[in-house]
Amino acid sequence: QVQLVESGGGLVQPGGSLRLSCAASGSIFSIDAMGWFRQVPGKQREPVAAISSGGGGTVLYAASVKGRFTISRDNAENTVYLQMMSVKPEDTAVYYCHAGLKERTSPWVADYWGQGTQVTVSS
Image (spheres, rainbow, N blue to C red):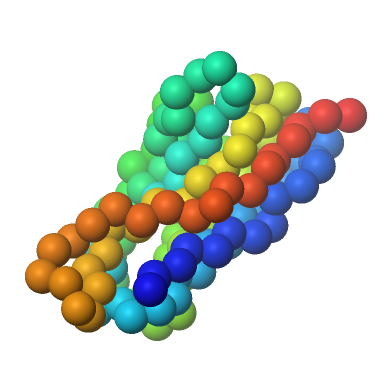
């Protein structure tokens, strides 16, 4: 069984920084794109950043975080990171890790999600 486990959330002051991590484990054959989404109560989950597989790692960012957040991944460790800089109160949300991956026992690439980690930006 595959699991995505996030860590690194918490309380941070406006203008501060935070680093989220998400490690995938289990019977993994391959991982395609990985990314981060966030959700606040009463709103839809929205994409924050994504990174493709491969050494080059094409990245995408939501307009609201571009220039402040950086996504990266360690393919050897099946881990994706989100470095958050110059955070704002509107970045407050539950952040979810996502991966498109193929298990060893399945021919299909499927979507997997972490359990979510709370990020609160407040003074």
